[in-house]
Image (cartoon, rainbow, N blue to C red; front, side, top):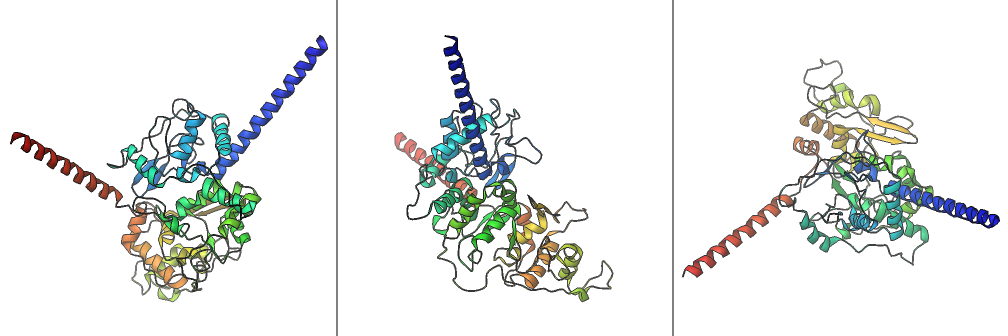
Length: 458
């Protein structure tokens, strides 16, 4: 009898140990998926508790506050069932039935499989420290503050949950597509939006404005996209945030490198590179100079050398460049030999048709943390009277000088454009149009009621 009890106890212990190991493995898988989904970038403030929310996300229709997604039962998602968690993640519906705004990329997360959603739920409920600090509320202008309106948007643009593999492609290609279109939600930033802020599927990955930054074309087109890059080039960029002589990550892409891509397995990054190398852009030109081939070394020190600091000079752009940029990027824009400070010619930021990234880089700087080291460029759009402050006219002058010497000579920046980027990027006419539409609808109702009352009196 005693021997049987010992065997039973041993069996129970082994079963418990196996269950714990399975739970740990599931939580670990969920943590990896949370990294792949870059949840940190939006739901964690600088120096804040992980996933406690509170970060303001700029959007063309107003500021959206990221919520607390820790397992706090008072301020977070601690009371969510797995079904409610899945609905929020893939359908954009909170546990209380209210709709989320698609700044939370649930249109991409809809791709996630049931197994991966299960792993994410296990991680957020058991692997994340709860934080009971409530976040501020999102207040969009009327009528977008009426969350139920998102039901109609979802009916038009939200796909059914799940992923269907393409059996004509390799397993790694399908894994890459699953990550790119799902967890990594690359299309959310790199695909242009329509009038109703929906992604234009026919122009997928061809580039889009994201707040003050421009997410460039990342199709396989050799002129407008990254078709000149090898798959290894793309792997290097995703793991380090830079590709010497071509591009470097800043803004939200730098956040994605820092928090997500560099931490993914080599096989997953290689799979993403394989998939992206197959994405076509049939609307773009097939020949011409790409944004990685333009510009050349140049300086114009003679325009201001020996002149008093406040004296008018023949080339103010050259003086601004020398005083603010040349110490790192070189007097001729050549960068450093190790490319830590990049060359300003043969550089996508200076040769893109959309100058937003050049302007935003000057205004907001660059900050990127990778295993190869931290990268930092100070912002020059600091508060007035600060030592590193440049006003809108100065930023426009500097941008034009850089563009016309090192990049796309056909692009010109105005102070008005600089002011728009400084404010957070272009706004959408959707709010005004929606307000006009609601106002017109109310007016029609009033006229109809008046007509009915008139008929009744008659």
